[in-house]
Image (tube, rainbow, N blue to C red; front, top):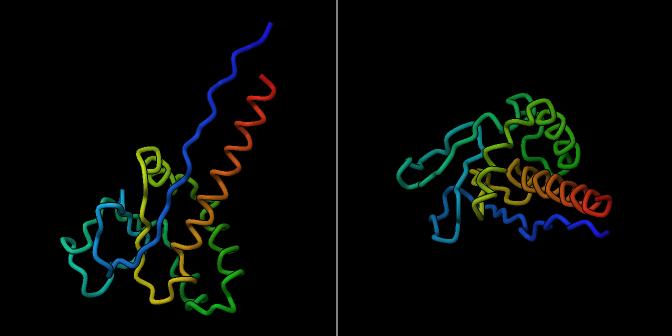
Length: 142
């Protein structure tokens, strides 16, 4: 007798990145600022945030050490992942928003390739891919 397979999730993670200084767009979805400090010169009205997750940002010590030095990028991401490992609940608001649709992580850094929002997007993608693999294995076993 065949058992019914659980439906697999076809949703793909849709996380975008944007500088908070850029104008909001309809396609941004849930707009989440992921910096510890409020960006200079941006009013709350202009930012049009849905959430500000300041506690998800790297610690002051890690931010100071990194100083947006591309040579420290790989080590920064490793240290940042380690910081968040002890605070996995910090990612939950992003996961919840992703269940509803697209999420745009907002940041203030000038360097668009080496900042905590980029690292967060990578972490979220990695976790979602791992969860999808686990679901696939569970489906095969059931």
